[in-house]
Amino acid sequence: MPYLLSRPLLALALWLAATLTPGWAAAAAGIDALVLGNGNTQFELDEPVPTWLDSNERTTVQEVASNPKNFVPTPALQRHALTANNRLWIHLRLVRAAGNTERWVLNIPLPFVDQVTLYQRRTDGSWATQSAGDQLPQSAWAKRGLYPEFELDLPSGVPQDLYLQVRNFKHLSIPLRLATSPEREAQRLLEVISLGLVLGTLITLAALSIIRHLEYRNRVDMTAALYGLLIAASVAQINGVLNALLWSNTTTWADYANSVMPALAVGASLLFVRRLYALSTHFHHYDKALGFIAWTTLGSVLTYVVLDRPLADQLGAAVLFVATTAGLGATVLSWRSGSQIGTWLLLAYVPQFLVLLRLVAEAFGLAPTFWQLRYLMSMGVALSVPALIYALSRATHDRKELALRAEQLPTQDALTGLLTEQTFQSHLGDAYQRAVDNREPTALVLVSVINLEHIRASRGNPIAEQCLLRAVIKLHRILRDVDPAARMGTDRFAMLLEGVASRQALTERLVKLVASGLVPLQGLQPEVTLQFQAACVLLHDNPVPADRVMQDLSKVLASISPRTRRPIRFLEPVPTLAAPLGGTPETP
Image (tube, rainbow, N blue to C red; front, side, top):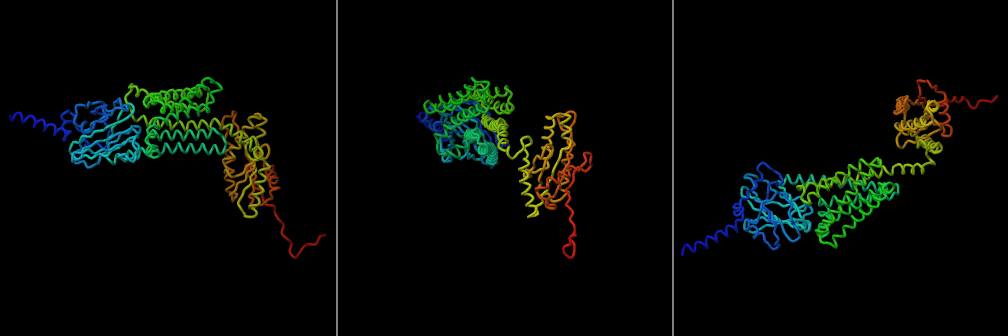
């Protein structure tokens, strides 16, 4: 009889022990505790972890803890066959090293996971829960952020069993990272700064395109701005920024945006590069195919409305792969056709394509999971924006420059881009009036390239015009942007240098000009130098009227010998006679 009574009592004791102390059952199953704080402050789990794929949605954590035999050790980053109808349970046994006082944080760096719940037993036997995921509003997250993160309550020296419940609509690998609170704050700060720099650069480039549109009224610049903003939104979305800030309470859109935004960005990218490359000239059929693929990519977002989510996501991944491959093909064709910016565009698209290949290989189980690819993809996509905008500026630069010069023909010399003689005379009149009325320091300089006609006679007109343009470049080196300059005939230039108060300051500038002319011009054989001579006047000291000052300076230039050692001369004031004393002299 005592034996019969002892068996039920023993069974009851074992059941209570397994229920109240699931950690004992875990230890019996051979699960080793992971020690935290024993020389480590942050790490990612890379050892096999016990997991259980449960198809019963009503299983409670109490039942999970009571059945440790259901857990099977699996590689840390194994891709689990998650669906909308099952849940993944992960069992962790942690112990904080004796004497370690740091608080620890567990995070799962996946902004697109549907829901993660952490269960941790309290001292009274109940379970404390923390949840996060894009199917939950940020207000329901244990800690608001870009991806799930949980504070751990671990007594020193006592092993604790934790259970993670993961829900997701498609297959997923679960990276688990542990760090002390200070180390985690440093990680979070680095992530925020990096994302801020990337997003800030993209928004700045978009703003630059808007400014270019306002200046040149070119619709392509506005397209580039919209493309840059869309890429910025996509990078922000796949890294969890938009879910945390903009639609933190719109859980349905926050969940679907991770699939929709990349499709919109890639489709818009194809439309942009199609217009930028102008493939229709030499690759008419490929250009049509590229347009079809672009609009198909944009339209693929509608499949999330009419199809089952996993099927729509697989179809979207296939469309993204085809679209990215088509974009790379267009870039290669543009590069092979001799495009000057083809190399930059290849550098932008090849990394994206390689990362996408790796993601596809991971999806089919052909490559191990590397969750940091999200950062590499974000960087590759972000790099494409400055490359494409640079390509746009290069492609439209010459046309815009010609249009701008055509608009400025009434006031600028067609060859050199300097002011015409009539326009400069107007600036000279205003400067003379300011010098007389307000004593504003202003210098007027007339410069001559005295050997230009010799170059024309000996080397031909094309070389002479090239030397003239290089002379203009050398003039700009001593001019400010606000200083007017004009071409005054075949080989002469006039400059107004405001703010020059003394002869010494003006001479120092002109000495640099004369010295730069004596440096042989690059690319011309035999060597060619430019011989500058200058006639100058300080209008605030010698206010010669604007209607005759240019004639006086021309006379000074004419008086300078070609072989002189003083190529810089000043117009001296006209000497005045003293007035006679005692009244007006009688005329004979």
